[in-house]
Structure formats: C-alpha cells, structure tokens
Length: 380
Image (cartoon, rainbow, N blue to C red; front, side, top):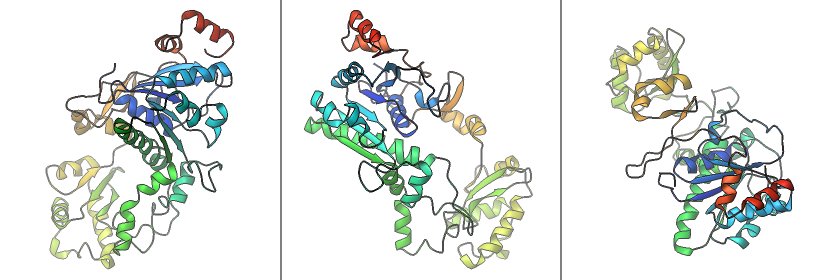
C-alpha cells in the first residue's frame, strides 16, 4: 500500500478532463490507490498533455466501455473498491451501465462521486459549458476585474479546480466518514456552479454588512483599495500589497519611506485615488527584488508577484517542499502536510493502459480471462 493518510483506499476513476482528474490526484497524493479507466481504443484525447501532473500517482487500465465485457470489468473493479469518480454529463454513466444504481447493486458501500458544471438536475443540467460559464452563473466571475472594465477570467482555478475537483474530493471524504458509521455508500453530486458559489460565501456577508458595494473593482479585496492591490516596480515586475490593518499599513509606510503626516487616511475611500498614485510612485522607484528585500522581516504585507517558475525556486517554497520534480516536470507537491502519515512524492503518469494486466490479476482475473477480454477488444 502507498503511504499517506488515505492508504488502503481504492478509487476507480473513469477518465475525464480537469475537475474529476484533479479530485483523483488529491486522493492519490494522499495515499489512495487510484485506478484510472482509460479508453482501450486509439484516439487523441482533447487537451491531452504529455506527462500531465493531473495524471500522476495512479495506475491506468485500458477498457472499452462500449462493450458489455468492458462494462463488466469496471463493475468488477467497483465491487472491491471504496470510491468511483466520474465527470460525464448527467445520464451518460447510466446509459453506459455504470450509474449509481448499477454500481451500488454490486457494492452498496461504494461512494459514487460525480462532478459536472451545472449539476445532475436543474434547467441547465444537459447544457454544454466550461469553467467561465459556471463562474458566470455562480456569481463568482462578476466581481473579478478592474472598475469600469469587463470581468476577467481567473484562468480556470475557481471552477475546474477550487469549486470543482477540490469540492468533489471534500464531498467524497465526507461520504467516506459517514460510511464508517452507516456502512453504506452514497452519491456525491458536485457541481462547479455550486462549488464556485460556495467560494463566494464571505462576499455575501460583506454585502449584508455594507462592506461591499459600488461595483466591481471598487471594494477592499477586489483591487479597489490602494492598500490591497498589485503595483509595477522599476524593472517591470510586480509586488502585491495587502496592508489592510493599521499596524500593517504603518509598516508599509515605513518601508516605502513615506511621511505618515502627509498621507490621507488609508481607509477613507474618497482618498483612494490620491493614495494609489502616491503608492504607485513610491513603489515604482525600486526594482522588485530590492523592494521585497526592504520589506523582509517587517509586517508591511508586501511580497513579490512571482511567475510559476519563480515560485518553484523561492526560498520559502523550497524550505516547505511546496513544489516537486516529477518525471522532469516541476509541479505543486501533495498537500496538506501530515506529521504521522506523510504522503510520498508522487509517481510520474503511467502510459495509458500500462497497468491493465497487473490490475486485472489483482482483481481475480486469470491470464486466460485477460487474453479473452483482449481478444474481444474489451481491454487493451
């Protein structure tokens, strides 16, 4: 068994894109034995990436789920597994013969995790969409951007990953906890609309308290406040400033060598345009790393805005082991950290279908059975 807090857990992953693989990567990173069911027939997958970090740390079998024999293979794996994860449109798994009822008939203890954009029901359940569409409907996209400008897509971090894969992994773990007392599995219906909406919870509290208003880019945490924003330095690089509280603001003023007596009150929204100009001019005098060095050891809440490549080599991240090299690809390390059951460094992705024979033997298939499956095109 792999080391980690989820050691001994077996997860069947029906191959998909982004959110479902990310959920399974989290589970694999933490010690679960994830078996990915890939297609047994040739074909280039959309957005397929060589040595993809989202495919790390799991075994892979090639199964043709368009055959009855292939479906039976997946059901046989599910009989002795703890979790099955799929990211199809609603109804697809049921039509394949791999829906919750099909799987629970063979293993009522299995947790069936499913991730979609819109959810398993509702008026939009069968509609196509991507991360940006789910964010738009959830209310998470509209607040992101500069005042007077259009909303800015935050890559696909919020929908696919934060409100998608991570949200699903949390749901799966909650269902496993509940199973410990009930002895029964259940379906976890995770939608990226629901998940990204959940990420905006604090915003609703701030609105209700009158602390968020005036539109996009005009509030404390959306770049509207000059003391919570990014600024360009003399060398064209950027720093992030988050000096909200008075003591942090005072430390920032000291680092920038400004006279506090000549500055407007930093919480006075009417003075924000003038204060922003003062900060931009003061910060713009320094190269980024020189200014960051001045702020080190203070509570000025001023840090560099690092590229992904720079982040991997920053001394703090190196000390924490925040990034690892897996098969020649630098990528984020498993997390969080556990003191008694730490996760191991992840294995590089396996070639699709590379573990078919080994996995089938573990699940009771004899060599003749495997050869018969291969002859009819059910596995590869």
